[in-house]
Structure formats: C-alpha cells, structure tokens
Length: 248
Image (cartoon, rainbow, N blue to C red; front, side, top):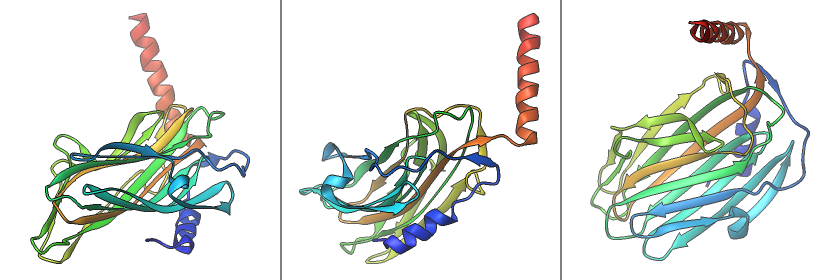
C-alpha cells in the first residue's frame, strides 16, 4: 500500500503549464464512491470512508485508505488522495480470489468543484503490475474494444490509456509491469472547451487470471483554466468556421 507521505508528494508534484484557477479550500470530506464489479461477484458500490480510515492533508485534499472484499471472488485495497478542486491519486490493488478468470471494473468517483470555470485542462496516468499467486502464471488484458484506464468528467469519458489490444503476462510466482502510460502531459495540459459541473473520476477495466493480483497507481487531474494563445486561436477559428457553415 502506498504511504501517506508518498501520496502527499505525488499531489504536490501535480502542476499545470496553462493558467489555472482554483476554488476556495474546504474542510468537508468529499462524498467519494467506489464501485467494483466482477464476472462472479456482481457489482458493489460503497463509500471508502466506511471501510478504512480518512484524513485531511490540507488544501482541500483528503486521504482514504482501507480494504473491502467479496468472499471467493475478490479482495480490494486502496490508498488515495482526493481533492474535489480537483484531482485523484489512487493506489488500488485487487486480487482475483476465485478459481476462474474474471473481468473487473473498478471506479473511483468524486464530486467536482470547477463550476465557475468555462474551460478545463486535464491529464492523467497509470502504472502498475501483476503478480502470479498460485504458480501457474498470470495474465492481465484490457477489455475488447475498450481501455484499461479511462478518465471521465460529468460521466463522459475524456481520456483513455492502455487501449485494446493490451496484454501483460508474468511467469510462475513472478511479477510483470503494467504501463506506464500518460495523457495530457505535462499534467494537466490537455485543453477541453467544456465545463465540469457534477463529478470526475477514474475507471479501470481488465481481465485477470484466477488467484492472481494486480495493482495500479492511477492519476487524473482536472483544472479550471484559461486557455493559452494557441487554444484561444483554435477556438476563434472554430467559431469562424461554424459561422461560415451557418451562413452557407
């Protein structure tokens, strides 16, 4: 499990190359939700604060650490930093405790606080590993036609990483790396001409062999921002093009 100190350092390291805007600090713990679904275990949604510990790191940043499980299906552990103004740094570890290969979908979602900003800048990353736990090797694959990592704003996917076909295997009682992969680097520098008004989060979807484990450190950052000159020029060009189409 990643340490609170390392998580704090990761949060401090997040920076933007665009002009960013921030809301006022808050001491209210955000209503974070986690959802895990698997082939055998169905879907479970819960507040991580109810299955472990929470702490405040300052600057509207809150930590969550704990674990949950479904007997005979999966075990899930987490250590996260969440800031609704806004970023998520999530260290997640899942073990397939069943006797068959399963497909897992794990989502971390938080309220968002950039409603006063007309545009957002985003970026994210994922890195991890798989480990064989029963001596017959381990394999992890991305979903067919999908991606292992996806980031969303207001329930709309805005970035994906490790897209199909992606697969990693490890030998008997060995481990293998997953990623790293990044978008919007330097994070967050991908300009998106939209607002963020309700939620944001990260979804990990993958197939994992029986008895084996996978762990990921996933980051997603959303900033209310003022676009740089290039982005403003692009917006102006798009507006001119739209006006010409309307006239024609």
